Amino acid sequence: MAGLAARLRRRYLADPLGPRRVARGVALGLAVALTPTPGLQMLIALVLASTIGASRLAAVGAVWFMNPLTALPIYYLDWQVGQGLLDTAVWLADRVQGAGPASQVGAPSLAQLGALELDSWWALGGYIEQRSREIWLGSVLLGLCLAPVVERLLRRWLERHRARWV
Image (cartoon, rainbow, N blue to C red):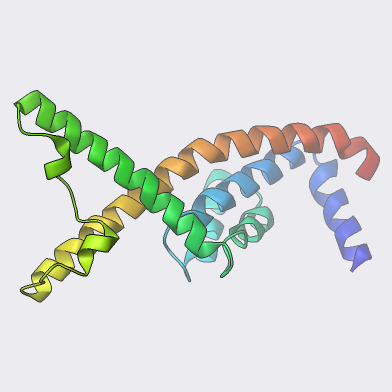
């Protein structure tokens, strides 16, 4: 196993574009890992990495950041960010239109969900659609904010340590 790791390090880091490709692959894989697409994340990362010239191995490996232990906290963070942004947008729209306070607007909280009477499957579908919209917005925003930071930091670190590994 140590021989395989040494060969991969030499292959990716000896190339002048190696650290850049590896860092871009890790950043892409991390951004894809934040999306609510379990089961498809490795395929999405592989296709996107091939498209933008990133390291496919690094992208697929970084997707494994999302695992059963980290999935719920990450999806919860995605949902909170998306909900906060959508509630802010509703609040701003209400203020511009002169509507009532923002506390009267918005989707019910999880505590209130038990008290809701869902008249039909359409109401439940609307509730699920709203929550998935919030999760997608939060995951895309977090991925777009986190990926460039991860790419830059990892690329600098790899370039600094390349001489020691190659």
